[in-house]
Length: 332
Figure (cartoon, rainbow, N blue to C red):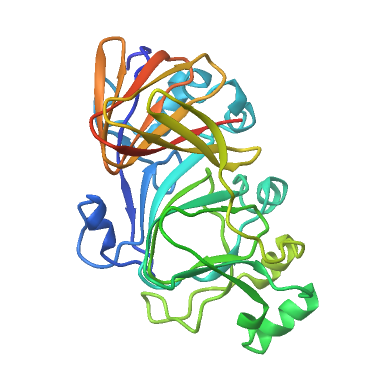
């Protein structure tokens, strides 16, 4: 395989959890029969790696590219992940046709010790679509202790402990590791997260899995990692970054693991970018049409498509063909 760097696009990997539906078809995904809950757009996770769909690496999974390109792909800021032979981020589309389980994800230290070497899982959601009145669960109500939480699970009264947050299209929600959370029904979202698939379920609404049996719960593990200081968190408040020549950037999530910007671009606008070895960039078109160009080459980014720009690529540009809304992700 070539060592010549170029921006990568991928064939999504689909996941068929019980809470999914058929709404990802609206976003241009070709679905097999039945429920589809998630479309993993850029994934180096071994359970569902995405495969490059164009160029010299076409047909190869992201972990194979990472094994060859290493820091030239992910960047020197990803050293903590590269030391463990992991790609740092995972980008998904989520179709919560039904509500997800109430769950929590561990942080790095706990996951590495108790989850077969997995990374922790801090994540964020950008709400693409939401039914009128849609809500999600984020954190706890005031005064909920570990003992009260366990007692509420045993007494089937956990909902009284949970903080419900109304959401609509365009909202951004940051979910730190240790935060109790759940998407509820009627939400389509982009998820940006650490490269991990470790989830501790504490409550599943009495639902049965595809095998007709209740899905497993992980109450003891969850109680070891829940941050009981996460009391009634709100939406992530956008932070203005820059506005020039028809391009407006607002930060809609920041953590030690990723930064996510919402980028609004006027027709014909150009964002001139450059990666210099420190961090990859991921660009995704949510509305409109754009084109990512480099070294006389171009890749089309219609809605909804994501592109991984290697950390060592150098100069590139994002150009719009009509009013366009995009997400930009990078490592801080």
